Length: 388
Image (cartoon, rainbow, N blue to C red; front, side, top):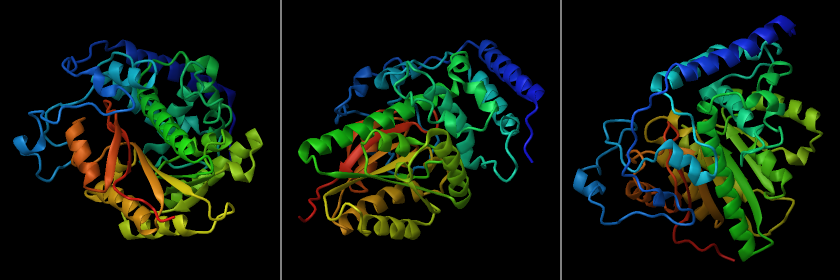
């Protein structure tokens, strides 16, 4: 049974805004960042680093097995200001680690209240923090000055009444903490995917584009790209509970925005830790007949904030599976990611090139940022020409 008490809504609005602002104001000190980092690393269209850099993995003994987050010095990691400038968004607020943690924990504790207007059966699970990220993306998506402005698309995935907390008139009052950090990766992925699409259409205007999002949570990027006419097919692959919840969210979205079935991605259940199942599903997608016939297809694999939660060794294996499936099916393809890859210390570009190359990808863009999903980049399939 759903409840709609106005007193709770008012309490949530006041408490959420006051507590978020308090969390920001109590700590204005942030540790100094690596001042030696060169902003040239972020010049789009190329990856800039020195191949003779004394920090390369052979000299520092980092060719050994890498455990994510374990004992590496800060290297190649930009300041939040540099990361934001690289994708054209406003920088995150200057605040202490304690402030960031306080704001994050507050939001997690309030999730149940934010969804108080939904019945228990209708309420989506917070799988791998997908629900938290949905609310944070809605704030940035309602900002008309942001490159990730989506015209309220993400906002329309949220529950009734309480979603007014992130209405465009209120969203601007939130301090630029976690939603601003996620805005950086959203902007990068949107721009990189569109850049790949434009480049492929310049080569062959009849090329069809397929987007496969692996573990994307409740993100609505594929809908946005379909409505823009930039992609022809879209698949969202995730855990069973996420897929079930996403179907409900998309039903809500379709009613609020009068979407056609063709505007929605195809949802498929998958456990990304089971590599052979992933290989099987991807092969079926790439070889299945389509309404577009035998036209040339280019597939973009997209990872956003999912590798953080996978078993050790799986993130690297997934990169290899994506490339091998493309080669086995004789298809074109690219890779876009804003995630935590394995075998890369912080934002080290040399190690990034090596990790991608080991899985048959050639890195095109490298734009790391602070945070857990710190590795942002795009790549193309290495030394492969599909048969015509």
